[in-house]
Image (cartoon, rainbow, N blue to C red):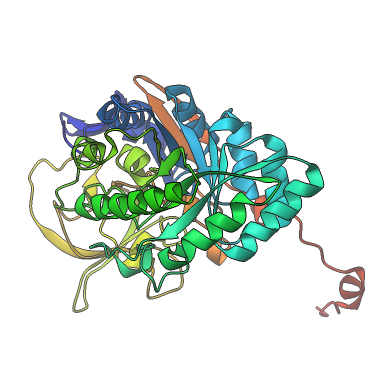
Amino acid sequence: MTPYDAYRYKGRELLVENVPLRLLAARVGTPFYVYSAEKIRRQYRRWDRAFEGHPHSLCFAMKANSNLAVVRLLAGAGAGADIVSGGELALARRAGVNPGRIVFSGVGKTEAEIRAALQAGIYMFNVESPEELEAVHGVAAGLQLRARISFRVNPDVAVPTHRKITTGLAENKFGVALRQAESLYLKASRMRWIEVVGVQAHIGSQILDVRPFKKTAEKLLSLVDRLEALGIRLSVLDLGGGLGVSYEDESATDPSELARAILPLLKGRALHLVFEPGRFLTAESGALVTKVLYRKEPGPKNFVIVDAAMNDLARPALYDAYHPIWPVRRPARASTYTADVVGPVCESGDFLARGRALTSRPEQGDLLAVMVAGAYGFSMSSSYNARPRPPEVLVDGKKWWIVRERGTFEDLVRGERIPEALIKGVKRSRR
């Protein structure tokens, strides 16, 4: 099994499962996102089977991809949801996720969000500060509902990933310090409307080495033992997500490797494992398909200008992220053509690839597939430069559906109003 096994060439045509990308482009226009349903299912099964010998739950990190059809697909496979906002709570419920399988993370939960989550009956809150604990207790008391919580602990574990997606260092905004944890657990255990159930840590994203996860688990289990000595017995160990995928030539980590590192530490312990994978489940299922508009070649470098831009896929601009780019129609003769692949947005930072060696010189109208775009692609998109957001398509075997319509001008101005005084004050020019 290869990272991009949902995509293959049949002759010269690139297919997603059994559907030609060229057909989809003709039907929905470009740019558009497309996802392979079977690839998402396979990724879920790989993780689920790796830990089948131990009680566990997988809660999909919806920030990676919150399309209702994708979330529903994963819920049908058995996943819960890891949410970070009231909006994601509403989306998860709309998609059919069992509220009892929803974990609420994030450093800035509002009282309205806490109230909605308690009324929905979620599995637990990952509490990230002393003041948040007070807020959760206050809302729970007002509703007379007990709030199940774990504390998100910052284990101060370094991981080899991009500095903007590390979350488990002391310098990061996430979680409570280990030295603070015991006193907070003692405080929470005395609160009438709080039920302390677990401990959680999330150390970062796109992690390709299981050793930081093992180190984190060891630190959390040491805390679990100290708390038990104080009379506080936990039942949940939540190790977050963050397992990486292959974008370029990385050697991605299989969940079975994670299981071999973690499960021996849990022998003799009655702890339910929770994981919150996002990227791992959906990234490799997705592609952003775009059309070549123009080429610029007379300068010091070549530019291929396409109709997708940084507002559609922000990761290259934000993180200098690498995404493979494949021709939708494979050239009859391969010949390396090096260029920057850029979009129409009025920013020098608007690029999908820099100095990329493409398999041929693209012609106007050619289609390109920007691969591994199923996570943090559409979910981070915007309407910058008044560009409507692209549609999303889900493919399952020979079947396909538009699971989000292309944005429109009316979407861009929805909710906006021009005050009547400004309308009356506009002077018409004379002809």
